[in-house]
Structure formats: structure tokens, C-alpha cells
Length: 438
Image (cartoon, rainbow, N blue to C red; front, side, top):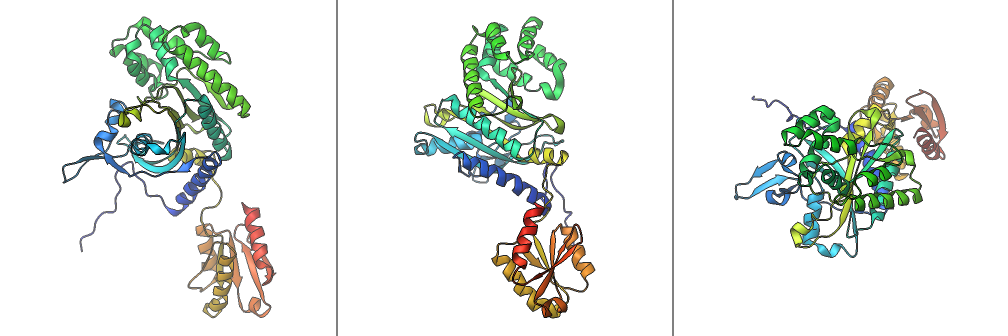
């Protein structure tokens, strides 16, 4: 018999049950916060027409799009992100924007990148976007969501970095190269990956002079609490910088109203997210202690929808990278101790106890407790070993002695302590034990 070697394409991963428990924990947290702020769920197809995706991300990014050739002659592609499919959806369903459409979307995307730490070819994005408003209040609300989400997941050493493409526009005008905005942004976006020296070398290769590069680095090196004032003094008269600075001041005031701690965010003129469709404020989140790079990124994209309907509709959003979030949480020991969805293993003494065990199993499930029964009881050593390997926190022991007294024994699998409860109280006691273990 010929066998097929079970293998995976590089950059892809199976998600085993324990990993899925962690993923579901994080996505449940995300959904809860998204919906609290009034965002509604949306899904779009994994496959789009190739021309729908191209011309939106910049050439370097578009080289990573997975292109599909179908026998019907159509050129298709796996989606690269969730923002462009949203723009396409709005283009064909413009009635959604009355006057604003707030959606969240949790789906997989694909990019032909070189696999490395924190970077995969298939990964899940968790996006929120608000379409239809130019108000900076929307940016501030999204930043408040990001802050709340990071705190809820247990992060404390994180920074939300904020900039504005209009400030970058003013920066290149100040440097004397106003037509080089996209090229400069794509290079600056690599600062954390390749370092300052390599970025400067890349800019020189693009024909930018040393004096022009020095002016760029004067701006992107600015620091301090008064950074917006510094920017105003240096580049306020160049390009759209003044408008961009005013927008960030408005965001700052609203974040203070929302009580977002000032040590959780900062304005960073070196932030230059590489995607070409951003038009205003941009932001990303880094967890320094995790060493994985940005885990959240987003910004304003006011002109993308216009490519589909002939008129611009303002929009702003952000994307949580689920894999990077989980990798960061694992590294910082922030993932929950629970490794399985099963809360109780019903453990019959032998097959003769199975009918009574199934009654208890049904009672547990009716009470909303996740439970399973050990199907082939031979010894408690085997049964408890199964519970331990799977990470099931409690075992419900049913033997002839317990049956004769209308009792059950509940074993804590971590402490190995066993308690006896009557049939009239064991459900409440198990619920209490489950609650205290969370």
C-alpha cells in the first residue's frame, strides 16, 4: 500500500485542540469588547478576483499575494488582508453606511512571506473598521478599544504608537522631496527590522541625498512629551503636516476623556506603516518584552472605497494579529491555565457503574457544565491519567460505595484532593470549584 507523507507547506500550521482553546479564549475576548463598542460581525470570501486586490498595498506587499489560476480563465487570489475586501463589500453594499457602518471581522489571510518568528503564511486577522465618518473621535474610540483589549489580555508593558501620514507628507516636503512620500515611508517602515544604517543605505539607493536623509532623520528621531509642538515648529508649514498635527491633538484630548493611561500610548514620527492606502492617522502596538514586533496595526483609509464606487467614503480601522498576540501571551505566561473545553470527567468504577455514570453525565450537561465520560473504565490510574494528560480539572468518581449512599466523589486533578457530596448538592459544589479554578 502506497502511503502519502503527512507534511505541511512551510509557514502553515495545524492548530491542535490546546492551541484552539487559547485562540478561542482570545477571540472571545475580542468579540466581547468589539460588540460592547457597537461593532457588528461580517465575513467575506477567502478568494477574490486578483484585480480587486492589486493596486492597493504597494508593490512589495503585492508580491506576497497568492495568485490562483482557475480553469475558467479567471485570475483569482487569496485575500491578503480584510480591509480591501471590506472596501469591495461597501462598494457593492453602500446602503450599509447610514450614516456609519461599524464592523468587526475575524478571518484568515494569506501572504507569501518568508516564515520566521511571529510571521506566518497563513494567519488570522481580527479587524474592526468604522466606515462613514471623518471625525477623529472614531480614531480615539478605536485606540481606546486597543488599550482595553491589551489590558484585558494581561499585557502591561505595551505601547500604542501613533503618527499621521499627513505628518509624513510634511516631513518629505521639509526634506525637499515631496514626491517621494511612498518610497520614504516604505523604507522607514523597516527601521525595526533592518536598522537605521540599512534604511539610510536604502534611501541613498533611491536617489535621496545625504542632506535630505539627515532632514528625514531629524524628524523621525524626535522624542518627548511635547513632540507635537516640536513637529509644529519644524514642519508645521510644510505639506499637510499642520492638519495632521491638529488631528493628533484632537485624538489626544479624546483619549484623555476616555481615561486611556498616557503611558500606554505615544506619538512616534518614525511610524510609517507601509500600506499605500492610509491617508491620515496611523497606529500600531508593540510589546517590547515579547520581542515579536507589532501585534496590532491600523489607520485611516479615506480613499480606498472610492476605487470601487467613484466617490470617497472616509474609514478608519485596526487589525489584531491573532497569532502574534498568542505568541506574545505565551512568551509572557499570560495564557489561561485551562487547556481543554472539558470541565469534568465522569469516572465510573467499572462497567457496572456506567448506567449511573451516564445519569450524572446528563445532569452535568443539563446544568451547563462541559463533561465527558471515560468510556472503558479498567482502573482509576488509567482514568486519572487521561484526565491529567488532557488537562481536565475535575473528575467525578462513581463507585458502588458512593452509589449505595447516594453520593459522588469529586477529585481535584491538580491537588489530588477528593471531596464527597450528596446527589442533591454535587452540581452546585462542582460549579463552585470550576469558578474558583478560573
